[in-house]
Length: 608
Image 1 (tube, rainbow, N blue to C red):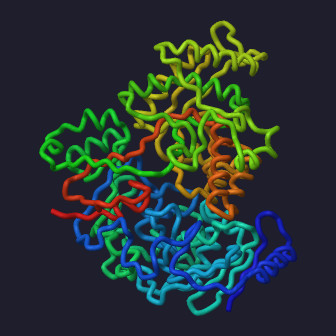
Image 2 (image 1 turned 90 degrees about the vertical axis):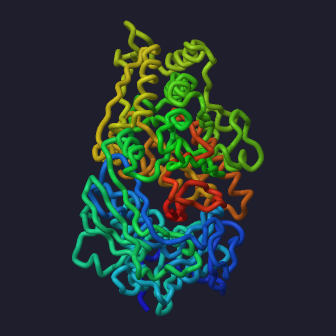
Image 3 (image 1 turned 30 degrees about the vertical axis):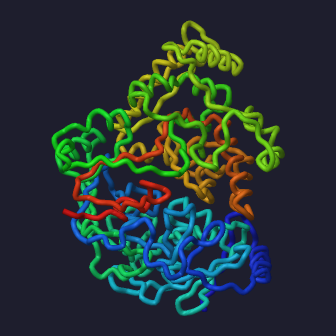
């Protein structure tokens, strides 16, 4: 039996760690291994389920699907900060201990692990590996591989893995195929987070630097292996005929293509032309105006290309132009509110989307997790927010709604209100330019990726609107590699920002909005928000004893984020628009999350 103790990142001493571990051990009660685990309540599927409900269990195997992507790749390690890995690599070639069912808010079922055991308080999680689990080279997946993967990802991997590792107080092998993680922090989501950690082969990395970018693909246990590829041009994933997990109920009806290929293009417009020319086989259309007007080439009218709309029930998330509050220019909420006012959503929506898109009203809108904009906080939500009242931006508790235009072509009333806020914040128009008391002009750069035509179009309209306030904004476009480097290090003023949110938000919220991301590179906290209240709401979400408490905490977080005025919000859609060759099929029963993770290519198949 191997034991591994370590000191957590919060700076606890060894004695303190051992004390916590001992306390948790005393709190443990006998528990029964389970085939699955839900964040709240019981898994919807019983232990003897034969397939996920949103798949075609009899889907034929064969054929291929070809995706088109903008940009390129220069690394085959998707688990570290360095380099840019291609799409599909982690999802198709590397497996986790448990698999997520995207027809439930947040429920996992055994994958590499046949069972999970935890107590009522979820102070630990014990996983038992399946006896036949194998890597693609035929070697068994062992407890040693699991422990090594968790520690390596938690210390050398992308920072998104570090938080969970810091909450583990003790790791021990409890049997030939069993491993137990005891926690030093209260976090009811942690067993599920660990269940979704990638498991890599320890032997592959002996004598190699895991955190250095390379073109050597990780050896995984998934349904596909990396086939032919050329950096920056294409990569293929070939279905492994000896895949150990092909007959598992969780996998039945999934991973049906013999080959999954990604081709890379200079920008989205070139990729779309490749789709029209038949070089790629599926396309996600994000622009509703284009969906309605430009899909008229012969393959569409003949039925060789099918237009499918996939509804979903997940939150709107947030998309827009994010302001980097690490920069002094954006640190005053009044300035951020004025910049939101200056964005003429109606004009941009009409120009780019034919007025068809819906504006985002809050981060968790379009779901029960979102608060009602403009209404005051009450009940459990108010109780959560009230201790932080003095430090919260106006509107968080009283009620805040994203400012709307006044409906006129010039948006005069809204622009006057924006000008008044800027004056309150110390900015006045001098010689036609907005300047502060020291005469420094208000100017900034909007960083975008080459070829992002819709965002560039929106930014150009925005820049013209800002001129009316005396603000000078410039649009700067860079290639994918530069964009990744600059956003990883927060070297931007304003940029395009999108965060998709689930029906069961949890630990990832700390990566999105946590204060560590203010200085730590590579986090998702691009706005640099530094909010004790936000972290408190996330902790309340993680430790809510029931669904009602969880919803209240999420609605409270939604208020903190929205009233923080960090993002100039744009639009969302409650359907995904997929155009695809008619040979590509998907199940009639759609998952709760719609076209999201685990949908395409996982549940699709090829059929003449």
